[in-house]
Image (cartoon, rainbow, N blue to C red):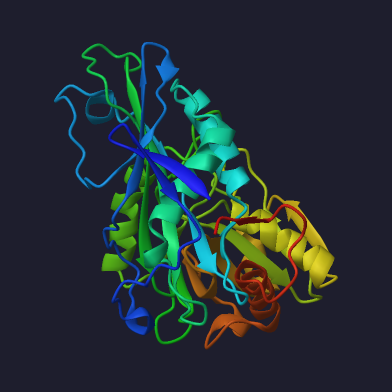
Length: 358
């Protein structure tokens, strides 16, 4: 049983069977579909209020809000699944809560408590359980917690008030019609700088990558590969995903850098590689010229879990990863199948990885 608040009134959601919304789950895309409820909490006068569910998808704020004037925003992304035994579960949401807490501290925003993040997640998913796709559809409920400076501020300073919200939207599988290996371009732009904000999930980090991303797409590429901004020697990440590579002897290698966002998916895949598949894993600096020595590669993140890399174009030419030109390589496929099996409940999860909501 879950209890929530809506416009000051307590609502109790009990174990009542809810009919699913009339959505064509098999043909669901990866886009925004408004759901019935979202969670809202406001920080004012030094404290977060009790929070509530709202049926209004629109945000109203002052014209001088800190989010609008100085981009004081941060967010997270995670998914909720219907498992094989008909539970509704979230995958490692505690790590999202902790990462958002750390991001808020770096942006001089009042962190939303981890325990409240998790209880808010439970409330909003329970209220929207008719939008959670059924098991076997390949779809899931995408969860977007975000926070922004909602109070008015004209001088360069932290906003006086903040709003924390969680929205949900059902999404289909990222690879509609099968996996498509990606063509990447080594970007001439920098994503993050040493001692900057590359390691946190600030909204501005993503806005800063849009121009370079569109430039790559105009040239016929799917995504950018960013290098470290100090030496332009080491592989870092894309505008919205981490990298994972496989060597000829089956070792799983991923870049290490203080300017990379600590991906929850990457962290989980490394554990799967080591503890489930018995593979050697290594997190270290990866020089760009090493690309030709890898047999598999992928972009990893919440949306697709792993997107296989087919080729990378550098200023010296195109490098092909042989296992990714037509489909996922054998190692990345095992990583993908194992992690998604854990998420959907067909493979036993490590302790604490799965939060049962309903």
